Image 1 (cartoon, helix red, strand yellow):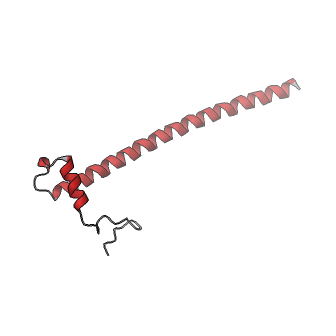
Image 2: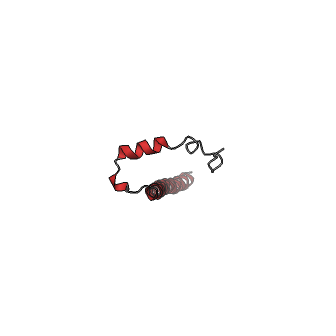
Image 3: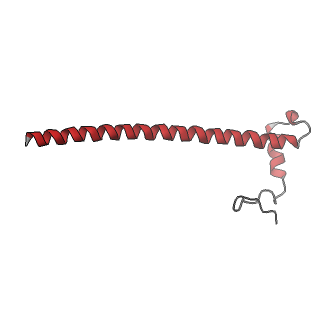
Length: 90
């Protein structure tokens, strides 16, 4: 009986170690996902900002408020919700 109990305790300890390792790996993967998401967002923001600047004659002269006013003034057709990944202008 003691031998069986000892074997079960050994198995329990082994499973607990695997659980701790799996939890640690889960945290690592969550961190990697956050980093990738942050990188994607940064890339998207930089790309879109550079697109905006290509249409402005002297973007460095505009304040943040000027850019916000410009974005608000864009025709409502462009601010329609994105449907199935594309803008609908009709």
